Amino acid sequence: MFAPASVSASVVPVASSKVAPSTLRRVIVAASVGNFVEWFDFAVYGFLATTIAQQFFPSGDAAAALLKTFAVFAVAFAFRPLGGLFFGMLGDRIGRRRTLAFTILLMAAATTLIGLLPTYAMIGMAAPLLLCLIRCAQGFSAGGEYAGACTYLLEHAPPGRRAWYGSFIPVSTFMAFAAAASVAYGLEISLAPAAMAEWGWRLPFLLAAPLGLVGLYLRWRLEETPAFKAVQQSHGAVHTPLGQTLREQGRRILCLGAFVSLTALAFYMFTTYFSTYLQVAAGLSRATALLVSLLALLAAALLCPLCGALADRIGRRATVLSACVLQGVLVYPAFMLASSGSFVAALIAVLLLASGAVLCNVVTAVLLAESFPTKARYTASAITYNMAYTLFGGTAPLLATWLISATGSNLAPALYLMGVAVLGLLGGMALPETSKLSLHEPGTA
Image (cartoon, rainbow, N blue to C red; front, side):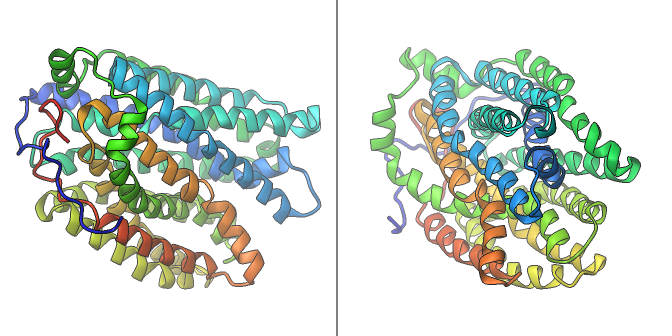
């Protein structure tokens, strides 16, 4: 599995359909704004985890209630592979544009329903059950979003700058989490605890409705990608059957999935769990922890294009190596600093954690598109991305909380992340160099 992979004979050197700059700008905006809406909706749950625990899982044990809340967070990820499979096959069959319009509509509807959901005090056990059901719908929708957005944008991007253009998808993801943290922080400092518990927590979820309509409008106005249209014209039926996709792309799915596992764990440790860690392990207030996360998320978004330019300059394999080493080396000192209880130390810690997470996310975005042929790209990349995020991303807050409880050490999550960095390095270095390959010729990777 981990020997360096050879480049398929069907892969040809760079050659592309020329995309007008004005069209490319619209594609970046539509893909990024739509992705922003998807992940804002998904992120709000993580940042309001402690409040949601009080509303839907009342218990005399705060840690137990938080574990249940993160368990529901993880359950949503169980539906992401199903969503990735469904939307991936749909996107390879009917096109990227229409499929991405559907994913954003489903996510916006599900998130709005959370904002309208009765609490445990109102309807008892039906409340957490309904919350779990709606979160599953969110997970199903998210399964088709990220890989599809990367595919859509990168199939338009010019050769030689794909990682730079692709970096705007991680930018929109980090900005979505920053916006969610901003809204949560604003509510924490402006509302009394009673108002926050009664109705304040609902407001971020209700924002999903107007945001979703904006994203849907932007996506619906765009055309299909040049690569998809080229294969459609050449072959008629575009979609490769699932069994054939798994047989032909299985090795790359496993190798890339090993690296994406590190991306997933680093991302959710940084964006979702670390805010809770600063409260539980470092004793910071909820508002202070959210502020630290917000500043780090904004820095991460600014760093993405620089990492994209680096990946275009040095290639994918060198970027993968750098990301794994950076993540593995910096995570332990980051958790040590964060546990000190100091605002400045916490900020430095989360920035250290962010540096590796950003590089992982940027190179993952471009590898999802470059690793697979056009006829199976959406399906294979969605399977790869969502299986890794289900196993390592969705479980990150829950497992980190459990590791601290089981070991009594606040540094246990750091050791776990270091171990997964080794797995990511082995898988990532087994992939071929893809920075010079074409995405625009029928049948190529």
